[in-house]
Image 1: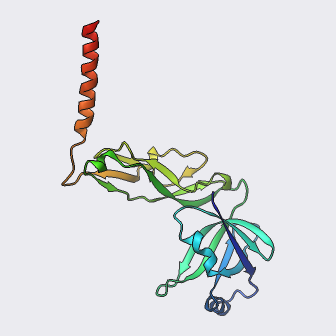
Image 2: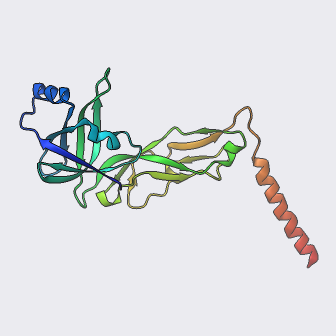
Image 3: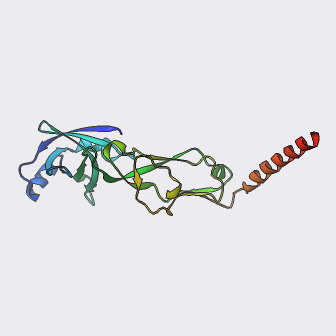
Length: 207
């Protein structure tokens, strides 16, 4: 799992007024929970760029007044109008202790059905996973290269090693649907089968 380093300062005053003062200074109030005790700190808004705006799951290595914590992003709150970062919640990673988070789905390859004019449907782009810190995936890869028109992949089709996917097993992650310009690529399969049968028949005749 990729890491992002964050240096923060312990918060002494955790009130709303103090939080607003920090935000006006370009700082973001944060909390780390899930460990022995909650840790309240603040950090410069700019240090969260690689963590917040990344599709992959990252481990945050947070230095608060010399004490280091390993955590994952749990929730980020933004201003409804200005869109600046208001607050960040982290979940501390404790060795051997399972945590629940979401991981992005990364599609590998270009589906045959799409190349034949079909339309790719990708309704489930993130999956809810549960694992110990050492087994948390950055992303979940799904090979769609051989998918034809009408094919689909659900949660049940995903191989997970070291982590558990908590979404409904019947939930569709990706599918190739037909469209007006689509070519019936099932004929390719029929032709391949027919060629194979023809080769077998020729071989039998030769014998």
